[in-house]
Every structure is written in structure tokens, then in C-alpha cells.
Length: 410
Image 1 (spheres, rainbow, N blue to C red):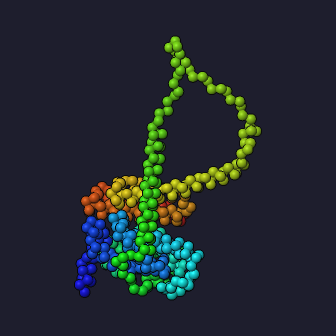
Image 2: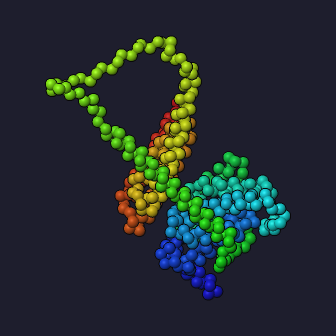
Image 3: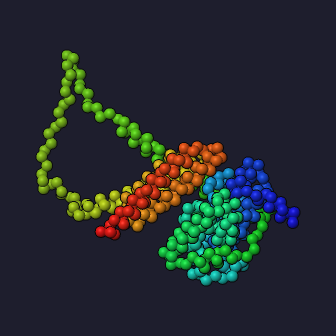
């Protein structure tokens, strides 16, 4: 009873509060409260993704959190889910190598045999969860997979109950639509994913496998971070090079000096032999092939630009969250991404979906700016600047709807 009361007292506050206490003061009670809060959700994910190796995966996830708590940005449940997927992926690769030299019967299964199609459905659930924005993934994990009430979810995530309600509805709809496109229904999967036996306790001395997994995950996270920094550096060099090139004056070639002081004009270029019209297109593919090749190159370049802008958007946002860059960079990167995606959109419905995704993203930026302003780490100008761009995109949505209505009226 005393332990339960101590946990309740230590667990008061949002995830960010508990993380800050652990990072700042190495408060073990705060860390224990986080394990108590998210242990069930991590365990169910470990069983779904790692199967018989769920114990080692569970230990490795929280060992990673204990060592990387200071780097957590955004929502903690979403971060834990990403680490769990990374740990499980490592375990699956190890298991495939081990299976080549070791009989499967030598190992005792923890869980009973599951229908392969059902197991594939659970894997698809986690795959699509990982593709959702952090705030939608977090609310699904907390409310649907861990079964917490909206009040509890709001307290843990530092949101209002209204935000939890709205984001949960939006997240369920997004996940349902994505799974439906892959031929899977959401309802039964959520129920099955949440029903997994008792949660184990963290061992005082983690297993050798858990420690090895933790080192591998931390190393992979560091490499990923270095890649993001490299992308930002390349983008910065490209922008700087463009500025330098645009700044170069277009001066004419200087005249050559003569001994008598008079300027000597540069020598005239040699006359070229007139081209034979028949040689002009010799060796070139037909015009139709050249046109198709040009269209393919344009499409490839557009796809590469969108990928680069997505990397830039994620990196800029991460830097802004950590107060290492201003909001203007993150905002500009997201608007550039929207424009690039609109250029390749094939119909009005796709364009409308892109506008709505941008509004959702800018709403998240606005919440970050508000939190930083409330914590005296940001300004109200950032909040208003982001809100103005969000409203600009919403106006474009309404204008697009008006055009559609006008077309329908004709």
C-alpha cells in the first residue's frame, strides 16, 4: 500500500514533467512512475512485435529510455512505440540468423500459436501506427491500446480533454482508412492488440541480450541524428551557393592593354561552319522518346525534391522543438513542402488532402510555440506568425471548395 501511494505521488504531472525530473535530478521515482504509466502499452507492443523475445525487448526499451530521456521530443508514447519497433526489428533479424543453425523446437514459446493472417494484421497495425503524426499515434496508444480514460490521457500528455477527444476521433479515422486500403478492419485489431497478459517488472540487472539491444538502438538513433544534421548542412550549403552565384556580377571581358596605352579589343571568335540541317538530329532519339525522357526526369526530380523537403521539414521542426532554431525555418520548410506536393497532385481530392495535412502540421507547430511561450522559452510573435500561416492555408482550402461548388453549379 505504501508503495502504491508513493507511486501515485511520484506519478503526478504530465510526461514532460516526469521526464524533466528524471533528466534534471535523476529522480528514480519519476522514472518508475513512467514505467508504471506506459509499461502495459510497451509490453503489449513487445508481445505483438517480438513474440517470444518480448521480455528482452521490454527491458531494452526502458533501458534505452533511461539513457536517452534527455533527447525525447514530442510525445513520449509515440517515442516509446518507435523504440519498440526498432528493438523488435533487431530481434527479428537476430532470430532469422539463429534459425538457420538452431532447431525451432529447441525454444519454448511464451504465446500460443496465432493464425498467420491475424499476426500479419497486427504487424500492419503497428506499421500504420508508426506512420501517423506523433500526436495521433500517442492518443491511440494511450486511449485504445492502454485503455486509459480521456481525463487520464489529457493529464499524461499535457493536453486538454477537448484536444484528446478531437485528436482521438481524427486518429481513429485516419488509421481506419489506412488499414482499409490494405484490406484490414480496425476494430478487432485494436481489441486484440490491447489484450495481452500481465506486465513483467523491470529486472534490477538487465539481461545481456537487453543490454546489447540497447546499445544497438542508441547507436542507430545516433546515426539517424547525424544523417539529419548532414541533410541540414547540405541544404544550407546549397542555399549559400545559390546566393553567391546570384550575387556574381555579369561583367564584360576586360580589354587587353597595348604598349601605346590604347586598349586593344579582344580577338574575335572564329567563325563556325554552318551546320548541316541533316546533321542536326543525327544520332538523337525520336522527338516522342525525348519528350517521354524529359517527362520522366522531371517526375524523378520532383519526387527527389519532395523527399528532400520532407527531411528538411522534420529536421527543422526537431531543431525548433529543442530551441536550437527559430520557428521561421520550420514554418518555411513546411510551406515549401506543401507547394511541392501540390505540383504533383493529380486531382482536386488529393490537393484538398494535402491542404488538410498541412493545416494539421501547422496546428502542431502552433501548440509547440504556445508551450514554449508559456515556459518563457518563446515569444508570442512565434505563436501569431504560425497561426497566420495556418489561417492562410485554411483560406486556400475554402477557396478551393468554393471553386468546386462553382464547377458543380455549372
